[in-house]
Image (tube, rainbow, N blue to C red; front, side, top):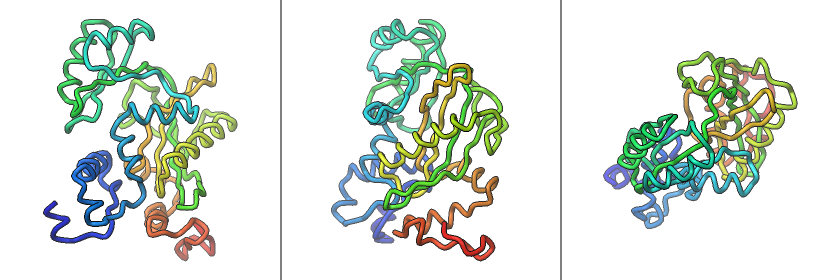
Length: 271
């Protein structure tokens, strides 16, 4: 509030601070000051911010658009978690819904681990809820970085494959761009879903979508959607040489991809 009073912004770009920035933006929106002072949001609508901060809402949207998702459900106590786990089986992943600050996610293989993880997650949640999620450990982790302009035109910047399977944090893995072991039809399916999600959430600028892929069956799931600048957006810009930050800045200022002119060293091409 002090910063807003001092600088009197016309607009706020909430996705430069990563997930922390998204969480802070929701808290600011809840005060009503953005409407009161007619402050616009750039890149991400208010409804999308709420969904990014609440996996339950985002999962509902993904199911409505028939995007493949793992089974996940929010609970308020251990008994609720036990009921879900009995139907989908162990292992399951437990994490807080709308965490107050730093949060933990834990993979549980039995009831004792489940009880402990639920207790911790509920204590970290602003809304007193924990998420119980089907585990997909061992699947390939594939990440797509895409762009969208205000008219809905979308473009894939990079497809990235992690060397290690899901179960090992992507930050501890080697990443390859372009993907090394996927079939072209698999890449196309993932790209279509990433585009559809980005359009559905009305994101302008960059969007980073993560997938889990079972290479034996071809089954894949959407596991995370990050409409903000993170290490993988920086990685995609570095590996492709595409001026992602410059193009995003133009898109957020209202230009379309066809209107953005790339710097001179990219020849006479539009974004």
